[in-house]
Image (cartoon, rainbow, N blue to C red; front, side):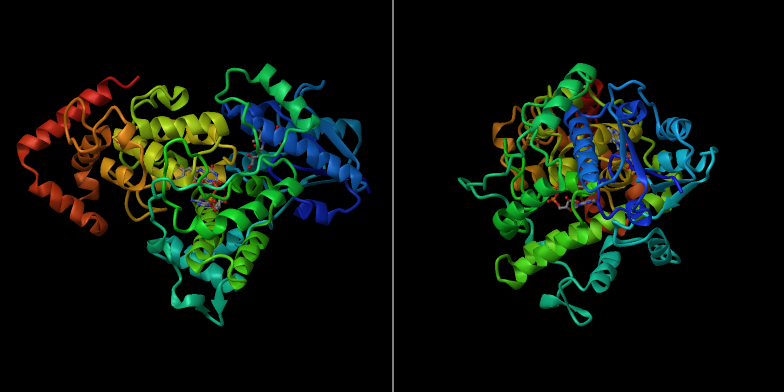
Amino acid sequence: MAELILILGDQLSSSLSSLQAAPEAEVVMAELVNEAHYVAHHKQKIVLVFSAMRHFAEQLRQSGRTVHYFAYDDTPQLSCFTDTLNHMQGLKNYQRLIVTEPGEYRLQEEFAAWAGTPALDILPDDRFLATHQQFQTWADGRKQLRMEFFYRDMRRQTGLLMEADQPVGGQWNYDSDNRKKLPRGHTLPPRLHAEADAITTQVMTLVDEHFASHMGNLDRFAWPVTAQQAEAHLVHFLDVCLPQFGDYQDAMKQGEVFLYHSLIASSLNLGLLDPLKICQAAEQRWQQGLAPLNAVEGFIRQIIGWREFIRGIYWLKMPQYETSNYFQHSRKLPDFYYSGDTDMACMKDAIVATQNHAYAHHIQRLMITGNFALLAGLAPAQVNQWYLEVYADAYQWVQLPNTHGMALFADGGIVGSKPYAASGAYINRMSDHCSGCRYDVKQREGEDACPFNYLYWDFMMRHQDKLGDNPRMGMVYRNLQKMDDGRKSEVRASAAKFLEQLK
Ligand code: FAD
Ligand code: DLZ
Ligand code: SF4
């Protein structure tokens, strides 16, 4: 029986359910116009996906598979997955068409609408620890969905950092130990750089030619494009960075892009690494006394806790999720999110990192660019699109709940119990950005004051009706109550003036 497996660009795992289900089947992979253009992806993201796809196709061929591969600049140029299946059916009459379920809702819709013959056999994506059904069951009947409780179930399920049914060390979560600022003069470790081979170099030429207007540059491209490279990067992280990962997880430093972060999300989301194996390797470092518990627990929580929880929320709440807009924010995304042309040193640093590496670490995404978008009242749809475009690890299933929910609170409190809103004081505490900034973090209002300061209080005043009775915001609103009317007017005037000049 002639069988065909369609493999999507983020399904580059040899253990993929479709490959396992049909060991003799032919494979089709395609660099598609729609996938490359549904948002204006960062140049490095396109190079990463196309190069990793080409390497994976090569690997499958070497293992004996027949692979039909359509490059972006081939003829015919294929537009979408349906187009690809139709094209293949025109060449040969396959009796079985197989695909592992896609990671994005829009593609689930596209596959559900497949009306050709034979029917499309859509298999579960078992590269995650929790199935859709499992998350649904966990969520059923709960008033609030909180990552911490889901995470504990994942710890029990995987047995990671467990002693019988109790967490090792007696605590589930060591987050409070993970908030150190980087000491002055601290030397950060070197990072691995995956050299561009002939395939990657060829894709870079293609991207320079066809995607010249997209954000970013390719000079510093260093993302792993094969499972082997991803593994080498992971081992480097575990050996060199993991011991300090916990302490400096929330730290920021001017000009330092990676700090102690793992840089594995791009590989993990493409399927080049396996989440459980990563966590087991980290746990082993703790067992061998090579990394402290706060670091290893913090790292494992990100993967079996946050990553799985975020995916669960996406599939539980889509498609309504992305249309919610709790605060009714509508301001246009300022141009400087692309150009980096702003006097705010913290924002500039995060955006320049994004241009150069298609990367910014979590605290920059959440507490700098995300926090600004929240306080300035930027339109969630535009902010979501920006995050989906600019990061090498961005796919809607993981980007949307993080941006729309965690950073913007546009979901009204599904992902988080309160908005991650912060004034300049937080940024000053966790970074060295403010000492080199044109704005003064100590000033609260006026021309030279840090915009995060007055935008913070303006935000709290504008949304008192929605946030005032949130028990986790009690302290904030008690402080607001103590503010005299004169200062409130100054806050409003400073915010209005600043927001007016945003382009
Ligand atoms: P590390 O800091 O080393 O963390 C280890 C791993 O944990 C990550 O690789 C990732 O797989 C996982 N992880 C950590 N936090 C999260 C989280 N909140 N959600 C899901 N996984 C998590 N992550 C993406 O993979 N793709 C995105 O498009 C994305 N968009 C984001 C947008 C916003 C506004 C925010 C606040 C966060 C976003 N994240 C996203 C989560 C997180 O910021 C990135 O996973 C992380 O910065 C990637 O860098 P790293 O691999 O060095 O991660
Ligand atoms: C992100 C991406 C890009 C840029 N291009 C392609 C492509 O040409 N062909 C493909 O199969 N996949 C691509 N992808 C990844 C898909 O968009 C991804 O599979 C979905 O976003 C589902 O998560
Ligand atoms: Fe950012 Fe304000 Fe500090 Fe400038 S002063 S770096 S705008 S927090």
